[in-house]
Image (cartoon, rainbow over all chains, first blue to last red; front, side):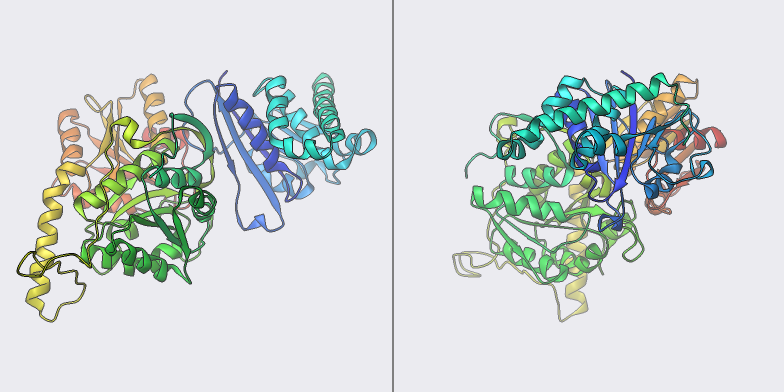
Length: 195
Length: 362
């Protein structure tokens, strides 16, 4: 696998950093080279939170990157914050619920995908697992790590919560599956959905 | 003291966490600190881990105090350290100067953030001048600039030994990226690798009678006479120069036939390493030179690399506006090779930045 660079951005509290932690932990467990840097500007106190991930079979150089292979923006503000990471090789993903016009989307992208993650999560599951739905989608878009390995890392990360509430485990697994399906569908549609 | 790591084990952790583990493995007894991003988690992890291993922590009222309490504990014979960043590094220059004056084996981890002033809390390489030559002294310090979590772990351990062996303040110079990112490393107990940890020793309250059974310690940071100070500084300078060949460290690749040598340090050297490989694959003879010790600088080694390669150019790449460039130029005084630079203060540098710059100047 050659180098995959991912920028995942959302509002503080949406769980973006947890997703990045789980995904890169899974990649590490799969013996891949991986680096994860949280953005930790002053925005940490309420604002857009970005996670930068890199996964590769080979040693990874610079910890940060200028352009990502895939960008996922989970809030309207996160869209404008992440435009800079998109170029003609980038798959750019944002949520279809956002009230934004096409000229607010990146000028350069290989593909722009609007994903109905917010709506589907609300309708089929529970808003609290939105980030795990997103994790499932990121997995499908990037193939940065195997689905099973990601699931294992998810269990190990949230074990303490699952112990307290076993139903949560099923909910999270469903969320992961839902995200994967949403991403699959959007890819089949050829990523035409430009909002 | 109980073993900390046990069997060598791989871990996927942040650089700050790696600092805390390395300090434990190096048998540090106490950390003094004051919070500042991006260094905070060094303290957080240390306070979480220290009680389990019977180590101590004191949060002081500011960085001046954190630096001076570190100096105090060291005089009492404790293996002590501190960590800071940015404006905290500015404040700590006064205690660091005391450590220089009194030859205290102080270890400080610096996680560079953006500047000037509060700058950013994110990343930069703008504390090179401050860390190498800060304070009202002569820069008699040892500064290791790390580029990965493995090196953070290795050089914190090595740094304690260098400090206690030579009695100069030692700095492990990281940055916000290294502090906050997660990447794999292997942790180990130094003894298991045949690294003998220098035992700390008290500098005050010693047994014996001065002038009869032992020499006086002369732990002094102020003198009445100019001539006294002059003698002391010359003695320190002499010791520093004598030590230099033993502690200087660098990394060099592909310099034998290089037409251009890319000089970088710290995390930027990862991008430089990749850039040199890319350039080579495109038929451009680029070389890679990285000072690991910014103080003392591998002057002789860089001059040798220049001489053997006959390189017609040097490119200096750094996330500051010329701090490594100035350092390198003063060390290369007399060389006539043109020195170009890629200066990106406060932001990361990736391989393509360096590749493009090299192509634009070849």
